[in-house]
Image (cartoon, rainbow over all chains, first blue to last red; front, side, top):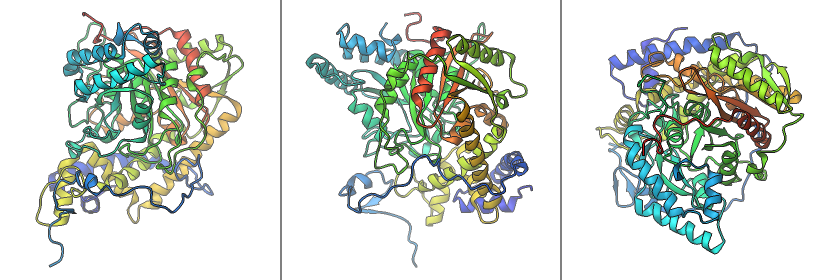
Length: 95
Length: 494
């Protein structure tokens, strides 16, 4: 199946990557080429084959339900591009 | 000269006090000062006083007889590992000014072992690429040149800065990460050794994530024994990574030099790709002959789903990348582009902060995970991945290791293979299957092609059997006796 511009626009929206119309067409062409190439997987018979999740070398384990980290608010906030006191800042989202 | 040593030789020299860790560090800082402008192997070089202070601390431990595994050994760190208080960019504009307040588990282990960090090495943006041309801080130059030709060659990728630094004498060794070949392919292109350990062997905590079910850290070194030594320092259980293995870490460096007599080496028929260059095929035959002479039994095996490895990879890796890179939103860390709305900030930040290859992979991943396409692409790829892994598990019932070429060509020039993404992806055709299966794989430089460029062979082993991989790698290294040096090298013309 070939990828159309409307789907490309929807994908860019889902991924929150703001692309201009001209860029969207370039991206559409690249993705369409890759999708055409990966379509070769349709010839593989996977009837009854379970999906591989991770590399299944280790079982997932549970740890004790205790606090192991914390009290590092300022260190974490030091990475924020914009902040106000002990808060991240964003544009107003509630009218 | 000090910049031409292996880790093992340098460790012995330091132990015998033939030279100090300070002299060793200074020699490397000088080499970086001379060559890094040209090679662009390091994005960040640590301040001289910090490097020398770490070296002095190592010297003090040698004097007291308390030296550790990697004490005083100057290494480069791929700029994908978070280093506390040291800028960590992932070669992206998005993280151009990111200074992590924490240390990755792998680099913390290397520091505990006494390593002296020289700086952060260049890579493809977020480790996505096979030529180190997608870095926001400029491409890395391969220190090797074709004979009689000054064309700039790529070092491979994504760990291209690490490979170039080790090859050119700007570090004794370096860390890399490998998602589909990002340690092994640049190691082959630059004539050094690169080991991708078993998935779970090294903690992923604090390493900037690309594709979490595939990413694995490993050593890039000048000898197979060095790869064992450095892996020993990097590996081990970490409760902060839910996929970290709690199996004991063997003394990997002792695996080299062990007899390989009687080991069964599999030659997978499907790796004889159509159009394989004659020289690669010949080098592979030579490798088979060397291992036979060393007493190995050579066995033909089949990995029937090999040809689907790349296509499976280019669904699964982008899917995981789109999830992992969702965190770069312009709010909590990294760069931010302002806009009137919150969605506007996300969209502008991500459009301007990511380069085209990263954007394309995020979009590809978003597509294959989106409603209506998930089953046809992502779920299908996960099922094919099961078949790829089964191929390896079944092959390892017959043989102890597999021997293949590392890459389908020697290093290529800037500008070649660059228009069609699929053409670029083909670089990883021999490395991706082992990543999909999670098994360990090692690239060893074994010779030069007719243009004087290095070629590597790959040894793939069973899950958690890096020791046998290293033993066979050591045998191959001994037989090949690769001692060539690149054109650009710290010891050339000094």
